[in-house]
Length: 393
View 1: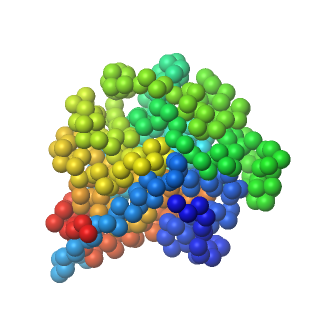
View 2: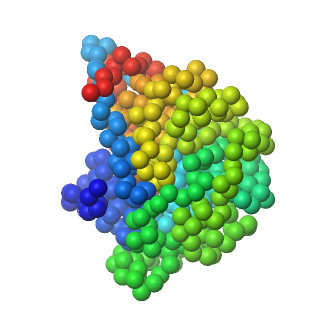
View 3: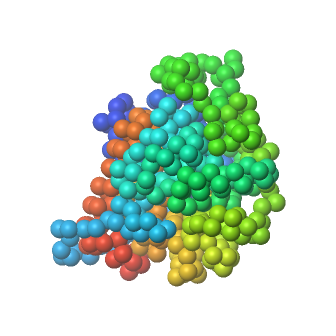
């Protein structure tokens, strides 16, 4: 794989951004390189990350015409909540490192558009704040730690804050090999060293916001662990040291029972695991490879989607997570049988580029692409999309 990580165009302002990848360029211009490459990078040779998007290009849409699409309806129901689009803003960690507004910006945009969004156990804004200020559908991305007290506390805090769902991440029992992070020395919080100082100093707006606004922390964790809030650590080391590699199906069942509410597994890729999730009463699965950041060489979620839908789609909601860069990617996932599509980088680039205004513009662009695509496909509701409208090359 070529390692140039090229930024090909000349995007210099928010008004120049007309698609997700334009926001990527603007983020590159705004962020210190260790932070940008944390968002942008993936595992090993990053082949799976690339395939996550390329998979959508191997399937063509077959539109119908003369369908009377003057009025269309993009709403759908995901995990019991009606949402404005069949799109989930996947939970991602550390967002106030990317822009000082962080999860607050994403939550406000999600609420305006009535979209599901999630915060990570490693979020930089607390469960309590998000619960108190935002009434839209929200999930906690739950990491299963060795510290059982922390695990129990996360469940209780999500319940008290009236979160709608827990999404247990099941593909991070050991960290993937994130070589870009190793090259840049990325840690949370950032560790300023002679080698990294210039990369941070070269982005003075980011540096001033980081140094003089609210202290960076991981408030969902800091009552139990120092790592990531007061003590700098790489994400790889955090996963390897803090998460429990002995997590198994019995642990998942216990967590589902302890939570008692809507429960999703994030990181399911095999039919066998999808069936097991349905058998134990999960409400949804996110077919996901963690954005290509874990097992490089694994299948893309969209490549795996059809066989999982065929196996369990009548028993459990199936969300296709990762690689989404266009509204037509969402339509292809829905036509294959997914309840919704989801992604992280599709809004993280925009958050890093311009905070809340960037996320708002990115979601507006994706909304326009979904609406335009539905009209061009000749469908008035998302439920009308099916596999008769797809052809694999």
